[in-house]
Image (cartoon, rainbow, N blue to C red; front, top):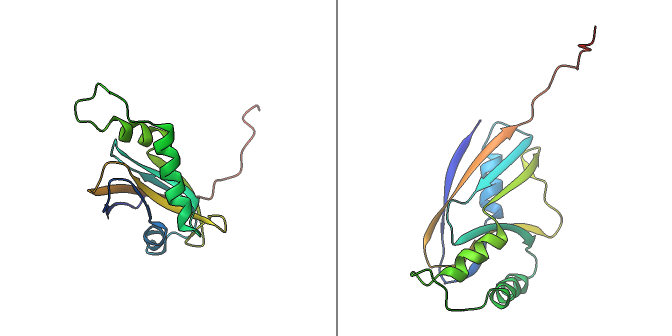
Length: 143
């Protein structure tokens, strides 16, 4: 099972970075044509999501919506980044994407985004490509 790590550099406190081309390049560099690609983000103040990538205003609207949903309160966490932890909880830390003929099976407008909520930082994403396998036909074990 091929696997690896990607690096993402973020530039602001909160941003969504389109990583679709980078992830597609990973798929196309593998000798596997079809399967499942798993992405995992090991950071507690960042997330991964699939959303519209045609209009950049969608990303700023998502951040604005998350900021509205997760207000700045007097949190107990001493680092002062509790809203970032909650936003990461809402977006999630992993994605599973189907791959056919070396290409991600995304919808017309869909892109993959790394969601930074506590930047700027240098982040990593772990990936694992699980190939499709041909399985033998089921046999009747009741005989």
